[in-house]
Image 1: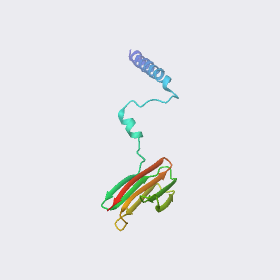
Image 2 (image 1 turned 90 degrees about the vertical axis):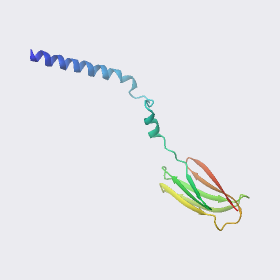
Image 3 (image 1 turned 45 degrees about the vertical axis):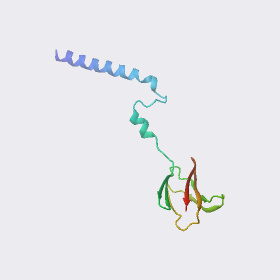
Image 4 (image 1 turned 120 degrees about the vertical axis):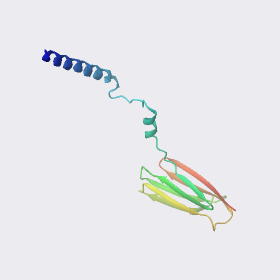
Length: 125
């Protein structure tokens, strides 16, 4: 009698396992859409630089996941190049721009990486 009960449990588990295995074979090898909002948010990473203004100083931070070349440039209001630097191979690019002793003007900071071009303006009065 005990053998029959154990055999019945094993058969029930085997049938359940086969049913579950057959249910997921249609998704095998295909891209599956995230079922939960948490999964979607974990994948998205913002790679834009962050600019923080403190008075006449601007701090820039960029997560450079490609470790490629990052160009930093500063232009004045007449599109003259005031500052130029290329940083290559760093995963985190940090730069502080100090405009405290700059001439009165409007300056544009340009950051170029593999994913795009980003701009930030500062007005010196």
